[in-house]
Length: 371
Ligand code: N2P
Image (cartoon, rainbow, N blue to C red; front, side, top):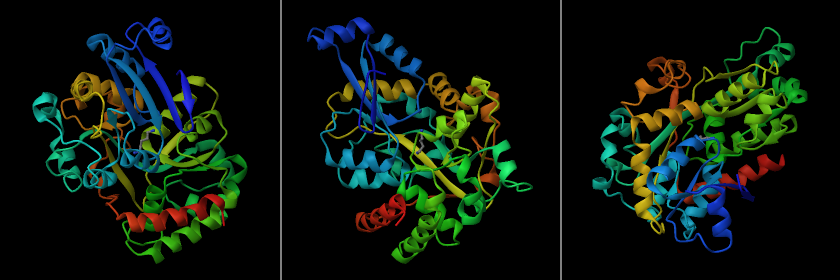
């Protein structure tokens, strides 16, 4: 990790490592081809980037974001300088309409044959024929919690319902041990609307107002609304409950285990149902190094490579032959590779018009400020 600007974190992987960085800092190393990736935080095994660099001689500059809202604003504006970006399914149609991402040349992606037909089918409404995107990881939204701390505060309660986080009287009892919600308006409204018995893909602003009223009433009990800090907060005991993304919460559990700090974190997809999402790689229309982007996409399409990415991130990937290569514990975990029963409770977020999103984002400001 070599630097950080705002919400963006940066790693640089050069062919000659530190020496190359020093050279480029004084203007001597600028000749080497560079691939600039903008991906979600905690979403790749850094060793894979090093291997890609070793194999291709392409230096990787790797920046991270932690919400679709941040990514979309940048990519739709253009001129990001990135060669690879990673939006979620429901954002993709807006990128395509805005011509912000480039159609893919399939001839340059022989590894596409490994993509899981079922996953491609699920992406069909967002990117028909997979013309613009290559699915990367997919997962769910749910609740991550510290089993001991929740048992102390909500004795006898099985954490299997959104009631635990969406009933103000429950959340009030958890406030003292740390409560984190995602700062991701579309994702958060989807699960809140679903909890309220409304269409999680409602196009009706009044439904979003009702969801906002609930979230604002919970705000005094929420420690922090943030989309990536909850991993460490759960792992080190600063948070006892979080609404988050499946693999992130599994990573929190792993970090706590590795730290041997006595913290045990569990993940649940609540019984009322939740969102399943699919993150994809795309090449911005104005990407400076499309050649490097294709090389990277095809590298990530190798079953052995993407299986390692899953083992590290604890998210399912979209590569069929890779499944057998994913750690058994992960590929048999229904929270990672959902069974048909779990799948029947999941919904997919649809693409909304910009005008509705603007109204929704204004309402989200009320949630953030608690007013
Ligand atoms: C990775 C979170 C990705 C999930 N930290 C959201 N699509």
